[in-house]
Length: 223
Image: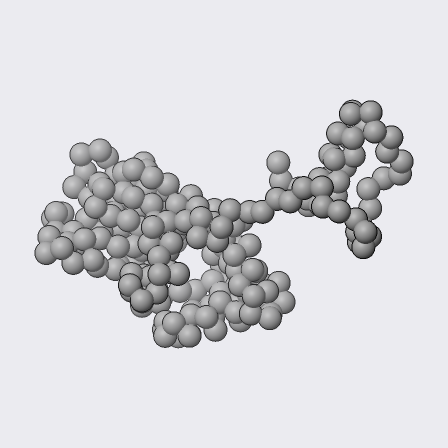
């Protein structure tokens, strides 16, 4: 379950398990540093970064997305805050020669209404991720949901729809905002990157099929 105090909850759960096992526990768990002579009882590590990126994109996981932005900030010497993440992410995009004009990263999840991205930014990032000389970015592509099969596109394309299985794309949904950005292989075998953003849409039930149809058209199968 979600918690505002994960470390404290873990300590209390551990203390309860010790008591249940017959170990005498006194006092309540509190924040402290381990003594120099202390030895590690257990170690738990998260999934590797590439797996976290893939899970974030496939399932549109806002919590992991926010954590990844904060980890980027820490890795680049910035504070693990909204502002620190914004600076770090913007600088990394600039290093990749991604056009950031008009973009604003108020948070890492994309839930803040002040967030702004452009189709040029998204398509350039997808193109960089497809660059054979940048294997570290490959999870950006492999994590994209597959139309009609996985993640947030699992139910967006019917089994017999023309774009099913041909389109890999990340969805974006807020009230009045719908987007679809990803890749598709056209009839000539070319890998195309695309980004369609609709702002001011009042009905996701109409906006999403329109975005799906645009992506299908790129594959050369749609009308």
